[in-house]
Image 1 (cartoon, one colour):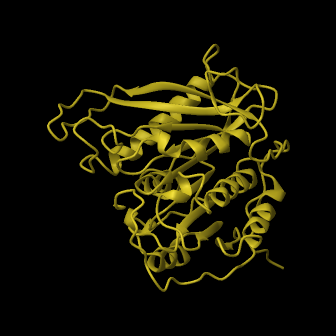
Image 2: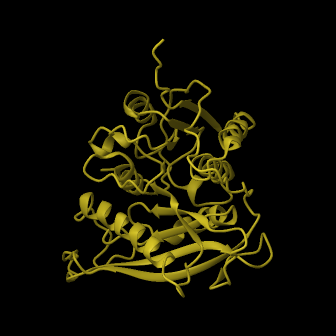
Image 3: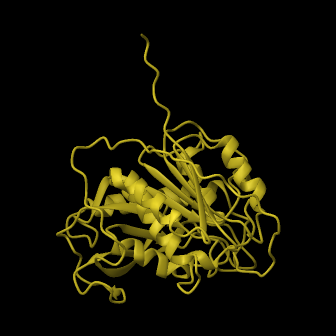
Length: 337
C-alpha cells in the first residue's frame, strides 16, 4: 500500500532522468470528436451529494462504531453557465450547450479529503469535464475514528467503482442535477497517492477492471505497491511521479512502470517536486503543468482528439526545468504478407 499522503520536506537525491520519446494513443472509436477546451474556458459549478452502498458495511474504526452501510459524501465539479475564470459557484446552473461531457472519477489519498484537491479538480471541469470525488470510507481525513488503512485495498476499490456507477445512474435520471451532463461512453478514473492504486486497479487489475473505464491518471506513487501486475486491458494510462517524492522513491517507481505497464502509457516526471503540493497548491511551480497535462491526456483519450497528445508533448517540451515525459505507443497489429 502507498504511504500516507503529505507534503513532508524529506527529499531523495540522485533521481534517474527519463528519456524523452514520442508515443501515440489509440484512435477514438466514435466519429464525433468533442471540442478541446483549454483550462479556464468554462465556468464551474459545484454540488454535493452522498452515495450510500447499502450492500456492504463499514467496520468499527479507532473507537468509532461501524455501520451497516458505506456512506460516501461526494463533491462534484461541473461546467456551468457564468463568467469563465470565476471561482466555482455552488449549485450553479449547468452548461448544457457544450455537453454532454466526459466523466472523471477522482480518488484522494490517505488522511485528506476531496477538497484538498479542489483547485486542480475545478480546473479540469473548466476544460469540459464532470469531476466526481468521493470521500472514501476510513481513508479520508474526516473518517470517524481517524483515517485508517484497516479497510484499504479491495473495499476501497469497490467504493470507487460504486461511485462511478452511481454517477452514471444519476446522469441518466431525468431531473437529476447530473442529467444531460455526462457522456457515459467517456469515463476516466484518477487518483493521488493511495488513491492512484484504486484507479490503477479499476483500469488494470484482473479482479477489478471495469470495462467502462477508458483512461487512467495515476498521481504520486509507485504502482508496484498494488502488488498485482497489470492485465493488458488496452486502457491508456498517464502516471505522474515526483523525482523527490518523500514517500515513494522515484527510481523504483519509474523502473516498475517501464518494465510492467503495458502500452499505451505516458510517464510524466515532475522535476524537483515532492508528494502533495503539485496536485493541491496553485502556487507550486508544477501545479499548472499537472493540470494542463491531465487535460491534454484526457482530451487525447476520452475525447479522442488527435491533437491532445501533441499538446501534452509540447507542454512538457516547453517546461524542461519542471517536467519530463516518456511514453510508449499502442501496439500495432502485425499484418501477414
